[in-house]
Amino acid sequence: MSVLHNWPVYGHDWAVEHLRRGLQHGRVRHAYLITGPEAIGKETLARAFMMALNCTHADADWRPCGECRSCRLIGSGNHPDVIYAEHDANTGALKIEEVRAVCQKLALKPFESNYRIALFRDFDKARGPAQDALLKTLEEPPPQALLILLAPSVESLLPTIVSRSQVINLRPVALETVYGTLIQHKGVLSDQAELLAGLSSGRLGWALRVVDDPGLLEQREAGLDLLEQVVGMSRARRFEVAEDLAKDKLAIYPLIELWQSYWRDVVLLATGSPVPIANQDRRHSLEQLARELAPEEAISALEATCGARDQLALNLNLRLALEVLFLQYPGLRKA
Image 1 (tube, rainbow, N blue to C red):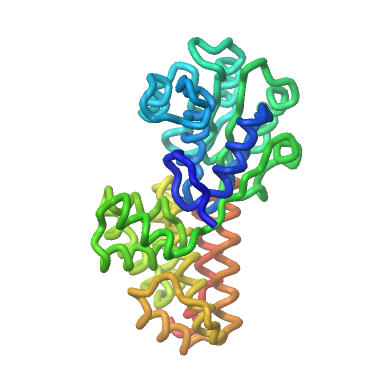
Image 2: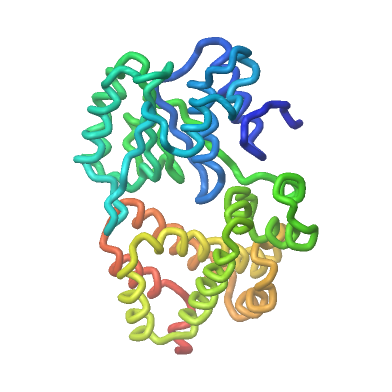
């Protein structure tokens, strides 16, 4: 059932209602961990929550109003009381020095708001020592300070961090919700909205990004083309592709997420599952691959891709992780 609210968040009404109830009853935790797949809407929810926390509208039921100075500054990413942790520009890692710097800034009193907030995007990119650096702040948070961590899942995070945070796990939304949101709020034509909804796998954030940047569809096409080519390559050619991909670490994670959705579709087709596939525009090649592979081979490829994603989250050797992944993909005997 849909929940009425004015938060700029679509498809995650239950999460909005959970956070709203906490605000209404004065039960705001000092740390929140929002998890879910890439482009599911984690940062959108976090931004709306930060706006609600610091909104100055006289009527609490109308917070966030989206119009006061605080809401506008948070919406644009320029609020003086919101600190954004920066990842290493070359590796994408969240380093211990950055975590410590953010915690020092968080310890200051708010300049003009109710809360001073630190947002850590992709916190799974922080290694053990960097995560450890956050524990003291989690255990003894400064007054009026709040931490928001974003990550795909809790698997790569220290249990002590997870246990000290309010975990909100965002799940894929119904395709009908994606379709309706694109038409109602973005003015997308019906045919295009249906296509994007199907390709989104319930990740509304991804569909909204594509509307604003159609080039993302071309990137998706190129990523799936590459995967289909890799399956037909020899071991030596696969290693060459791994070496080439390893040069751009920041682009690998979304690519692996895309490949994971592709192999999931192959598994569904190979096992005769009635569950609809996500990559409908690739049905022909997916069905062909599903006919060529035993179900066990498709499942093995999917599991290998999921494993590679987890390894990348731990910042392990990128080239080696890709080589191991490609060795587990089917097709080598025929290449």
